[in-house]
Amino acid sequence: MKLTEILKGVKCEIKGNPNIDINGVCYDSRKAKSKYLFIAIKGFNTDGALYIEDAIKNGAIAVVADREVKEYPGVTTVLVEDAKAAMAKIAANFYKNPTSKLILIGITGTNGKTSVTYMLKSILESQNNKVGLVGTIQNMIGDEVIPSVHTTPESLDLQELFSVMVNKGAKYVVMEVSSHSLALNRVDECEFDIAVFTNLSQDHLDFHKNMEEYAKTKSKLFKMAKQASVINIDDKYSSMMIESSKAKVLTYGIKDFAYVMAKDIQNSLNGVKFKVQIEDKKEEMLLKIPGLFSVYNALAAITVADFLGITLPIIKEALSKVTVKGRFELVETGRDFHVIIDYAHTPDGIKNIMEALNEYKTGRKILLFGCGGDRDKLKRPLMGEVAGRYADFCILTSDNPRSENPMEIILQIEEGIKKTNCPYTIIEDRKEAIRYALSIAKKDDVVILAGKGHETYQVIKDKVIPFDEREIVKEILSEGGSK
Image (cartoon, helix red, strand yellow):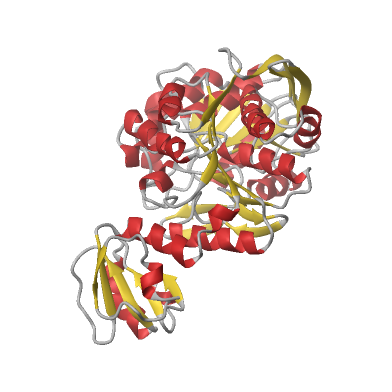
C-alpha cells in the first residue's frame, strides 16, 4: 500500500518521498521488517522515538512521530500532532476499515464488561452467527482463542484483529471497551453500532484523577455508537451516558422504570432466576452465575439481543448455558464448605459479590483479597472498609504487587478494615493465605478468593509467576491442607 493511502485523513507534514510502498506498520521496533512504517508512540514506560534507529536497521523506510526527530537518508519522516491518534487512523486505513464490515458492539463500565460480552456471544452464536470477542480474559474468533494482553489492545493490533475476524467470516464482534482505550485513542476509527453501559464505581483513579473525569471518558463511547446506546438506568452516571448518546437510547434496570426490566428475582448458590419484561413481552430467565449483578449483566445482553431482533425464548436458552471463568466461579472441593473464585477487584466488585452471598443461608464468609500494585491507591482503604462491612473474616494478602512492596499495599487496605469490627489477619504470601483460609473453613462456610478471577499468574516486580487459584486449591486440599 502506498504511504499516501495509509496517511489518508491524517493531518501531517511529510519530509521525504510520500509515494513509497509500505509492506507493514508497527509501533514496536523489534517487529519492523523490510519496507515497514514505524510509529514512534510514547508509552507509560518508554518512548518509541528512542527506537527509531533500531526500526530502520530492521527495515523500516518511514517513521511517524509527534515531535522533531532525527532524519535518516532514504527514510521518509511524517510529523503529526499526536502519534497515538494518528496510529488509529493509519491502522484503519492500512487494514481497510474492517469495522465497517462488522456489527460492532462495545461494552463499557467498571464491572460486568466480561460477563456481558460472553452472554452476548452465546446469544448471537445460538443463531449460527460467527462472533468475534475482544476482552480481558481472551480474544476469540468463534471457538478460536487468541491471548489477550490489554482489556482493549492498541489501535494497530485492534484493527489487525478486526481484519482477521472479517477474513474468517465474523458478522458480529462483542468488545470490552476500557476507559484507558477511550482516553488513549485505541478505539478511534472503530465504527461502533451499539454501545453498552454497565455501571461506574471507583477504579483507575490513578489514571483518571477523579470520578467525573472517569465518567466523562466512558461517555465518549456513546458519542461513537451509530445505532443504539444500551444503558443501566439504575446507575447514577446513566444520565451522562444518555446525554452523550447520538443513537437510540434503550434503558435497562431493576429499581427504576426502564425499557427492559427484571422482576421476581430468586437467588441461590447455583444461579439466579428472574422474569424479564420488555413492553408486553415476558420471559423467565435462569442464569448459572448467581447474584444481582448477574441479573444486571443479563439485562444488558438481553436489551442488545432484543434490539437485534432475537426473541426472548432464544435468549433464555442461550443465557442458561453461560459460564464465565473467574466470575462467581464455584470450585469443586469435595468438602463440606464452598470455595468461590471471583475477579472482584474494586470496592463495588467486593460489595456485589458479598451482597449476592448474603442472600443465601451459609456459614461464615471468609474473604481473601489484596490490591494491585502501581494502580489506584485511593481505592485500597475503601476495599478494606467494604470487605470489613460484609465479611465475617478477612485475610489481607498480595495481588499483583508489581513494583510496589506488597506489605505496604496491605497496610493501606488495613486502614479501611480497621474502621469496621470485622476480624482479620494478614498473610502476605497469597498461596499461604489460601492455605490458611482453607484450614479454618468449617461446614457451610464460604471462602471467597477475590481479585484474580480468570488470571493464572501473579505479577511481582518484573516477573510473571504462574498462579492458578483453581490448581492451588486442589493442591492444598489434596495435601490435607484443610479439615
